[in-house]
Figure 1 (tube, rainbow, N blue to C red):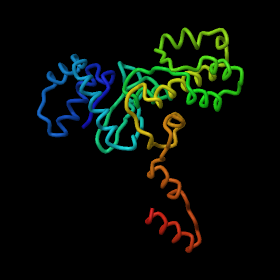
Figure 2 (figure 1 turned 90 degrees about the vertical axis):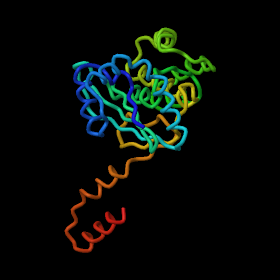
Figure 3 (figure 1 turned 45 degrees about the vertical axis):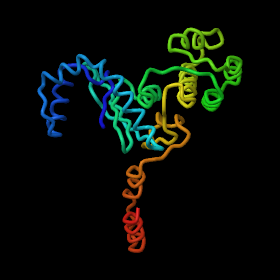
Figure 4 (figure 1 turned 90 degrees about the horizontal axis):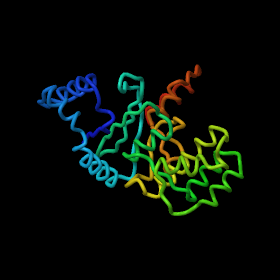
Length: 237
C-alpha cells in the first residue's frame, strides 16, 4: 500500500506526476479524477492514518530516506517512510530532524518534557542550567506547538539563548513525545543512511547495507592477494 501526506498533493505538476505514476502502474484513471482526489484530500486522511498504523504495527522496523522535490513552486524534499507493508510520502521544505519526526509520526508534532527529552538535550546542549530549568518542568503534560513555543521556548531562561540550543530543546521534547507514543504507533528500529537528521530519534538505528557496501567498493588494492580478499568479501557481503 502506497500513501501520501496531503501536503505532497498540491498543484498542476503534482497532478501530472501522479498521472504518470498511476498509469505506469497500469491504473486506469484520468487526469481530472486525480485532480478531484487532490482537491478533496481531507476525506482520505483517516484512511491514510489507518494504513500507516497497520503497516507500522506489523513490523519491528521503519525505513526512511529523502530526495529533492518541488513544493508549491519551491525546492523542498520528499521523505519516504516504509516497511514491507506500506510506503508513505511526506513533502516538506526542510529535511531536518523536525521534518523527519513529522514524516515518521504522520502528524503534526507535540512536545513532552520527560526523561527522554532531558537526556537528548543534555547530550546536545553544553549548558547544565538549561537542563536544570527543563527538569523543573518535567511532567506528563503534552504541549501543542504554540503552547510549547510560548511557554517553553519563550520563557525568560530560554529567550536569547544560542539558536542551536533552542533547536535541540525543541527536537528533544518532540522526540520525547514521539517515543512515549503520544503521536501514535511507532517502530523501535529505524533503517536509514548515515545522515545526521535520522539519528537519535528511535531507540535503535540500522544503517543501510547498500551505503555500507559503497565503502568497500572504493577500495583499490594493488597486491593480488588483497584484490582477491576485497572481491571475496564483497561477493559474500
